[in-house]
Image 1 (cartoon, rainbow, N blue to C red):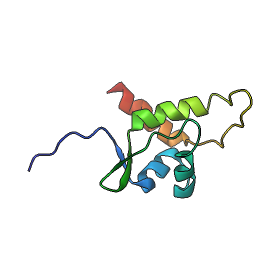
Image 2 (image 1 turned 45 degrees about the vertical axis):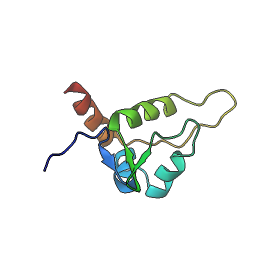
Image 3 (image 1 turned 120 degrees about the vertical axis):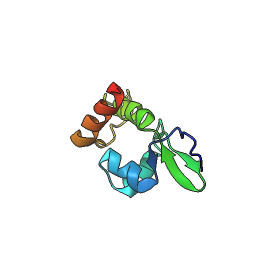
Length: 89
């Protein structure tokens, strides 16, 4: 059986929420933010790439745009360290 490379590292809301350091309900709410959390669907499951999520987090942690409110903090320090390790490879 061959396994195709998939463009995501996070499968399911549990993994996405854990990577963000938030609850599943909060992660799902982020999907409806502006800009939305970059989540796709594959066979009925939410999927996301760590790289795309990290970019989304970076935009959201830079502060609010004029006329908008800042979202609550979304990323744990542990996850940021994991991302740094992945990006060096």
